[in-house]
Image (cartoon, rainbow, N blue to C red; front, side):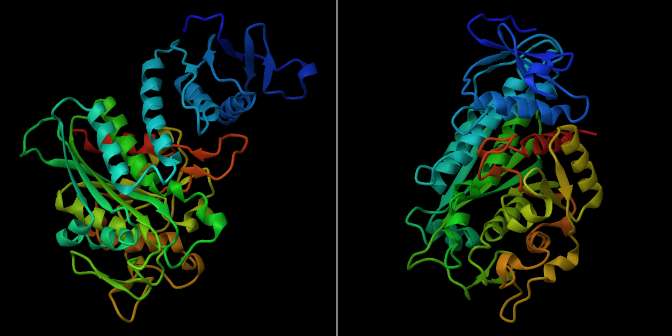
Length: 438
């Protein structure tokens, strides 16, 4: 149990309901040294997160979780509610059940991802995103276990990474592809056990398919996939990952200029797939296609990509769930169980091979979307179908996370406005479990 510090507010868990004077079914009531939280037996994690949000709304900056009953999951739910876009610390965790060290690791990784996602796009350029992600992994990983390659600007086109190049060429700040190699064995012949691919669109105007103001205002979050997989790799390393893993970040700004890509353009990828652009706002799948082919080049048997990819996923599952897609159904079932174990709500949406044909083009193998608002019915599945054209082995070993729960435009009773980090724990757990030596 944490030793109490008199000058820090003490937050404890009550064993009974609040006194009637504090209101019917009150969640919080004051004590001599702080507040106590009254939890109903059902939905205790959501109630705990709501309590954290309520205390943050009081302007409290520092507090200590004291007393008994603080499981790891309850403490983490409180942390998620208490944090906001400008505050990622201030909680002294309770070590009654020996969880404080693990919670500190979680907080470090989530804080990195949230700060990156909430950062202004003027500060976080594509190259800066790649460099900061690399620096974070190097700071976490054992010395000598990390190497990397950063390809930027015109060099992307020269290397054949046409999706990232075309999406990012309209910006004065160059697009970039980061390929980071975490190799704890430090031997070149060590097989790659997994590859993580993240969408890193540091700002998405929609390009010539320009977004309205209300949709564009939050588009600093469109690199949430890159931040999520970076933080997931860092967390897995902290939790003992011993396998070789590639981290691949596809970074660009999607802007309008005389040099921007246009509707009607056709991109031909390394694998020969030609793609007609019918919506420049369906750019995430264009950059991820390069990342997935790069992952395939590594021969990794497990490929996980994460992206704030479609509004259709948010319509389907709301803002509390991430959407999961996979052609490999047994792998998807295991992934859903890992997510459930980590208390991260995740829901599988439909994906079959025929989804590859849902965006037809008379001029190319496929279009990048349908030329209707939001990509039309089944837009999230169609986007996943597009991505499945670029993964090896007919999708065996591949998972696609559409991060519908990664960001909130405004605060609610459970979350502050901004990044949530939702998905980090799930991907780290999948990475550890699926690469463990059987």
